[in-house]
Amino acid sequence: MQKYIVKRLLLAIPTILGAITLVWFAMQLAPGDPAVMFVPPDFQGEEAEAYLALVNEKYGFNDPLPIQYLRYMRNTLLGDFGTSLRTLRPVTEDLVRRVPNTVRLGFAAFLLSMAVGIPLGVLAAIKRGTWIDGTLMVIALLGVSMPNFWFGYVLILIFGLFIPILPPSGLGGAKHMIMPSIVVGLSIAGSLARYSRSSMLEVVNHDYVRTARAKGVTEYNVLVKHAFRNGLIPIVTILGINFGFILAGSVIIEQVFAWPGVGLYLIDGISGRDFPVVQGAVLLIAIAVVMANLVTDLLLVYVDPRIRYE
Amino acid sequence: MTHAGQDQVHKQKIAQLEADELLHISGVRRAWYEFRRNRFALVGAVFIIFIALMAILAPVVSTHDPYKQSLRKRMKPPSAEHFLGTDELGRDFYSRLAYGARVSLFVGIVGTAAGVISGTIVGLISGFFGGWTDTLVMRVIDVMYAFPGIVLAILFVAVLGPSLFNLIIVLAIWATPTLSRIVRSNVLSLKEQDYVQAARALGAGRARIMFLHLLPNTLAPIIVYATLGVAGAILTTAGLGFLGLGVQPPQAEWGNMLSNGRQYLRKAPLLMVFPGALISMTVISINLIGDALRDALDPYIQS
Image 1 (cartoon, rainbow over the protein chains, first blue to last red):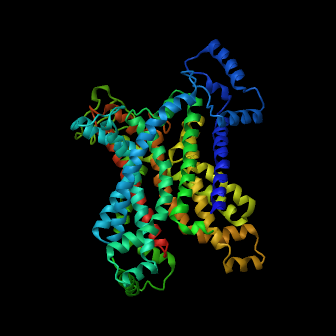
Image 2 (image 1 turned 180 degrees about the horizontal axis):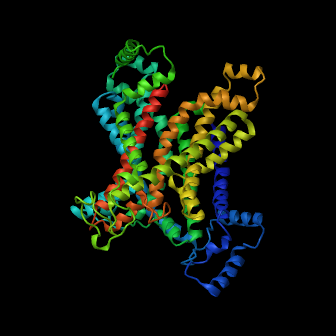
Image 3 (image 1 turned 30 degrees about the vertical axis):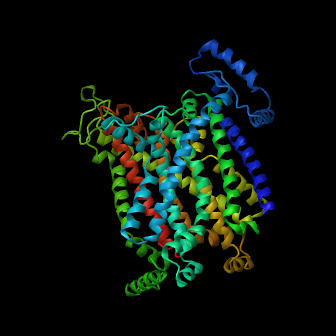
C-alpha cells in the first residue's frame, strides 16, 4: 500500500510540471510576437512601442526559448503567476482573494450533486426497466445535455424576473448562492446519477449479491450493505473527476451570475486580452484538478481493499 | 428487480431474437435490431434528422435573409410573418436559427471527426507499441485531463484567436485524450489474442496488424464515443460562443445567438430561450443515440 501511495504521489509531480509546460507552450502558439499580447489594446503608436520594449525586457522575451521556459517554470513553482497587464497587480494575489468564492460555490454544488445524483442513480438501478428508471434517466440526461449557462439564464428568467424571489446575480448571503450552486450542481448530478446507476447494476449481478439474497437478507440490506459498498468504488473515482467539471462549469456560471471567483477572473482576463491572468487562472484550475485526482486515488485505497494488497 | 427476474428477461430476449430469426445473424444486423428497439434513441434519431435537414436546407426552409436588418422591426414577438419574432437588429429569428444549425452541427461533427482520427491513431500506437511510447503518451494525456471540460479549449482559443478553423482544431484537441484512452485500452486486451499472434506469425507488419486487425475490432467503442463526442463538441462550441470565443457575430450560431439574447432577457426572453432549447434538444438526441449504440454494440453491457 505504501508503495502505491508513494507511486501515486510521485505521478502527480510530472503532471503538474506538464500542465505548466502546456500553458507555457500554448502561449508560444500565439501568432506573431508573444510580447504584443502583453500590450493593452488601448495603447497606440509610440506608446505601444515603448511598452513593447518594456515588456520584452521585463518578461525576457529576448532570451532564448529554453531560458524563458525555465524562468516561467521557476516563477510558477514559487507561486508567482506574473502581473496583470491591466491592473498591474500580482495575479497570485488576485487569485488568492477569489479562490474562497469559487470554493464556496463549488463545495455547495458538489454536495448538491451528491445528494441528488447518487440516490437517484441507485433508485433507478433498483427500479431498472420500469418507468421510474426511464423517467429518472431522461431527467439525468437532460442535466448532462443542457448548456448549463442556458439553464442559469432560464432560472434567472423565472426566479429573478417573473417570480422575483431570488437575487439574479452577485455576491451576498445564502440566497445569492442558491441559483448558481443549483446550476453547477445539477448538471454534475445528472452524470453522477448515470454512473451510480450503471455502477450499481454491475454489482447487482455478482454472485455474492445472489448469495446474500439466497440466505434471506432483506432486499434493502442487500442493496445498501452489500451492493452499494462495492458499487461505491467507481462512484468515488467519478467524484474526483467531477471536481474538475465543477471547476470548469463554474468558469461559465460565474459569468452568468456575476460571481467574483476564479472563473469570472479568467473570463475577464480573456476579454481584456490580459494573458498573465488567463495563464494564472487556467493553471490554478489544472493544479487543483491534479490535486483532487490525487486525493481521490488515495481515498480509493481506503474504499477498495484490493488496492492495498497490490 | 431480482436475479431470477433478470434471467427471465434474458430468456425473453433470446426467445424474441429466435422468433425474429436474429439469434444467428451477424453482429451488425443484430446491433441494428437492438438499436431499433430503443424507442428513446429513435426519437433522438428523428430529431437529429430533422435538425440536419434544417441545416442542409437552410436556404430553402428559411423565410427571410438571416442577415437582413430592419430597425423598425426590432425584437418583435412571434407573428405570421416572423414565426419566432425578430432579434435586436430586426433580423428574422427563425431563419437565423436555421442557418445557425449549419454552423453548430458542422463545427461539432468536423471537430469531433478530426479528434477521433487523431485519438484513434495515438491510442493504436500507444497500446500496440507499449513501453516508453505508451508511458509518454499516457502522461501527456494525464496532463491534458488536468484541464477539465471547456478550460483546455479556452486556453487555446484565447491564444489562437476565435475563428471557425481554430474552433475545429481546439475541438479536435479536446476530443483526442478520451478517444486515445479508449482505443488504447481495447488494443491492450486485443493484441494478446490468438488471431493477432497468428497474424504476427504469418509475418504481418506492424501497420498491417494495427490497421487491419486491431482497428476493426475497436470500431464499436470508437463509434459510440465519436457519437457522444459530437454531443460534447456542440456543447463546448456553444460554451465558447457564449464566452465570445466561438463563432463570431454576425454569423449565426446557436451559442453566440444565446449569448446575444441574454442582454435582452427582460424585453425579449425568447431570444435566449430558443437557441438554448435547440442546443439542449440536439445534444440530448445525440446522447440518446450514443447510449443506444453502446447498449446495442456491446453485448456485455446490459441495458
